[in-house]
Amino acid sequence: MGSIKIDRIVRSKRRTVAIEVTREARLIVRAPLRTSSEDIDRFVEKKRIWILKKQEEAQQRLGRTAPKRFVSGEEFLFLGHSYKLKVVDDGMATLSFDNSFLLSHAHLEDARELFINWYRDQSYDRIGERLKHYSSVTGIHFNKFRITGAKKRWGSCNTKANIFFSWRLIMTPLPVIDYVVVHELVHIEEKSHSKVFWNRVGSILPDYRERRRWLKDNGHLLFL
Image (cartoon, rainbow, N blue to C red; front, side, top):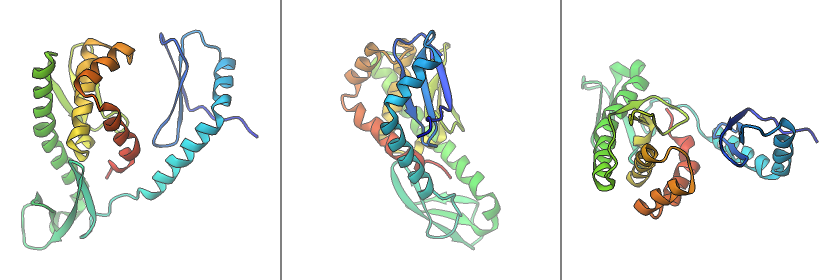
């Protein structure tokens, strides 16, 4: 029985060792600064069964997630709901939405870029609205926000109180968007994922665990 491959080790001022299996089935270990490689290997070995199970689940999800082909009848997520795509030949302008996506046949070669741009525009409007709402509710002020193409982080913030969201987040249900918005707002005041941080998130969204679970279970679907 061979050793389990560790794809990345992140050392920081944290107090305990933690492991994460990403949606690509990669293993990330987060450890205190002085934790030895031997101690990390022993910790990973103790978690062998759990790690292998999570990696198998991730690989199965990846196998079920085929790249979009942008053909009529294919479904695309928006705010947690699936909508079918119709490729039309009526000379319409590029891409539009009205309880289904309508894509001009003349712009098929640019379909992926058109969808990304549409999702970005929706993200600025919808996520921006939720960010302003929760900033008002919590009294936590941010500097500015931006929509990015991040594939591995749904949201992030920096020391200047700037907040960043992936455009992929607009595919998720509104309660999930709210969770990521609140998560990043609270990080402006609490930088680490400490007990204080999670208590603050929980005081705003008592069911945040269920919302976070949706992302963990369905994050592999948020790609084109």
